[in-house]
Length: 296
Ligand code: GDP
Picture 1 (cartoon, rainbow, N blue to C red):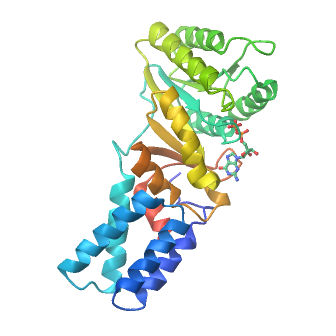
Picture 2 (cartoon, helix red, strand yellow):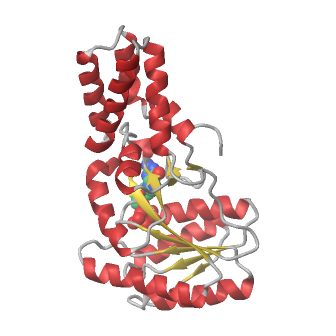
């Protein structure tokens, strides 16, 4: 998994290097850097923070270009590092990971990828199909479960109660000594109230039936949606006690700067990144690797 960002193409910020490589950084260069950051979806807040830090640093001493790049990298790494950078399910106990996010963001695919990696690392895994509203989603999840060799708990029929599926899955997980239970959830933003109630109910069931479990609520965000995706994310932040973010489709965008906007605006760690549609296209997030990919 630690083979770099592979298919990810985040080289838009190559421009940054070219810019600072031109010579001493003046006000014009700073403005251009600002533009480049905004174009890469870094967002206004994070961009301002980076620019202000750079300006402050430059008031202290004249920076040669390579030093300026080094400083930018260091700033970005710092902004991208939230919480403990090593993230994995705890062994020999139940971990429940709620996977939330708007439809189409990549929840189902990501669950398949995580199940595959976790299974390969020797974790006992189980998947719960709690997006009962979309029959196709349940079928799709079963296909991914098969690929990963992980069983999917689902209720027959459409419109069954998602909380009932989660209840069944938690009982099954406890009976089998499952270490990682991945829960797929609905992502219908059209009905915000229902969505929030549904996620809250699922959370209550888990907290009540499995108080021993370590629970993570991971938001799946489509990197190609940029700032718009971040606005949608706000709804999920209100509905679920989010503990982290999974950023998908980084292979389909050159605007990887959205990662900085996420950590700046949501104050949540990015846990994994998705860079392709296949089972193998998931990597643990590393701020070091990410910044190297942004600025190399
Ligand atoms: P869900 O509705 O949130 O469950 O989203 P899906 O998992 O069904 O994914 C929606 C679409 O995005 C599918 O066509 C996936 O193949 C695609 N997808 C998911 N993750 C990635 C990724 O990392 N890269 C690319 N290129 N496509 C992805």
